Every structure is written in structure tokens, then in C-alpha cells.
Image 1: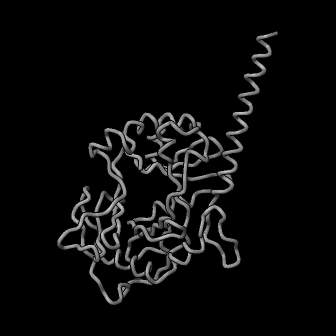
Image 2: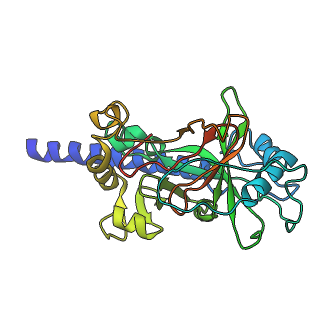
Image 3: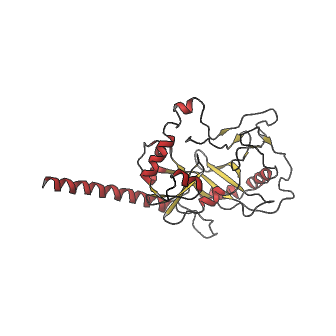
Length: 289
């Protein structure tokens, strides 16, 4: 009788835990569904704070001109960050370029440091967070695509963080559907889809990150992350000895003063426009910001 009662209690606890995980996942997925380009009369996405401000920003002349400046410079070559490349200051930076617009912003979600470290529970609301908004161009410009990236401004609103070569971030972010959440593991450029508490890979990097599995539970994915990053988080010996890198300010050079926009080269998909001396640089594999 005692064993039967204990078994019932254990089953009850497991049932409550499963219910909590599903409810947490459902709440996050319903709040973070796709932020599709809204029609004029459509309501703004409730999951993205200050979304109207983000819309106004990506539609502004300043952002449009910044994209033109970015696209006016040939893509720098090389695998390293390299020397910032000044961008010419033209009265009309879009002169001679085909017409284009910037699409409405989409949510870019990323894994959280606590989830990667194994200190947060394996539930969607603790596993991922909104870090940026991304907006692709309406069409390639002279054969090139670009993505506008917005970062949250302290106190509310959004500001232009970078313009990146290519449109993969926006393409993957746009694959979220009602009931699913798309998120990135930026350290390996992996993209995943979360269905309740099941993680599925969306690209080759993500498949490698799951050791070739077609899907894993959120708790199993956390164990994989913990093995990859727990000893490389901010404050770790790996970090304090200068082995890690992340988003930060570009170094000033005599040829690229802080008032001059510069283009910083990384590897293929890690090129960015830096307004002033701020650069959006690729993180090295194995670090979590």
C-alpha cells in the first residue's frame, strides 16, 4: 500500500511538472508568434514592445540612407575582424541605386545565458529572450541583400544597431508560425524552432548542434548547451583571459574617426555597418553574451 501511494504521488508530481512546462511553452509561443508585416489596419504585434517605434525607424530616411551607404562599399574580404573601412560621405547616399524599401521588423530571439549555463529551468520563458529586431530589404540591390538590426534602447524604443550583409537572420526569424517560436544559438549560427518543449533544427549548424538528431526535448538541448558553454560564460576564466568576444565598440583608427561610419569585416555573414565607432561583430564560437 505504501509503495502504491508513493507511486501515485510521484506520478502526480510528474503530471504537474509536465503541465507547467506545457503551459509555460504555450504562453511563450502564443506571445511570440510570427510578427508578420502588418497591413495598415492590422493590430501591432503584442509580443514586441514599442513596435510602432520600430516601424517608424525602419521606414525612416535615416535608416534608408544608412543602408545605401552600407551597400555603396564593396564587401570586405577576409576571415578576421580586420581594419574598419571608412564609408564615403555623399550628399545623396542612394544616388544611382535601385529603389528599395525595408520590410517590417521581425523578432530575433536568442538563448539566454542562464539557460546555457544550466542555472535556469528548461522552460521556454527562461530558455530564450527577445534580443533584436531584424528587417530585410524588399529586394536585392545590385545583387546584394542586407538586414537592418535594431536593438532596444534603455528607457524604451529602438535604435539602429547594425546593417548586416545577407538576409538569413530575417529569413529564419520569419519562419515562426502560430504555436511555434524560432530562436538562434548565435555562437554557432544555429537556428531552431521550438514546438511546446521540443527543439527542432532549421539549418545545418543547428543539426550539428543537436548531434545530428532531428529533434530533442528542451531539457536535453539545455544539457548540450551546458556542455558547450558553461565554462565559457561571462566571468569565467575563458572570458576573463580574453578568449571570448562579443558585441562591442570598434577600435578607433586614424583613418576612421568616431564620427565616420565604418564597415567592419568578419567572416562571410558577419559584415556590419558601424555608425560612429560602434560595430556589430561576430562572437567567437563557444561564448555566450
